Length: 65
View: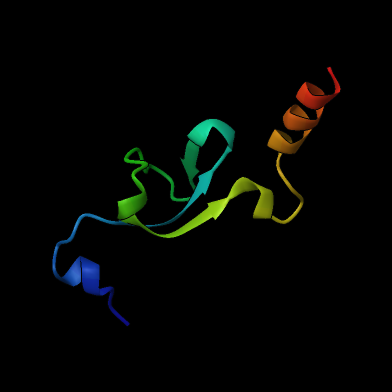
């Protein structure tokens, strides 16, 4: 099955955008440097990742201090 965005030359990414605290983002697609939400069909909060994210530890440490 072909990607309709690829077929129409629409600027997009096939990776998943992961948004961390402070709106810091990373993409699962190797080489993706345009981390705009509009380019990604899949956007998840880092807290929803299997196994969690170190952001949770940072938030807990800030609250404890």
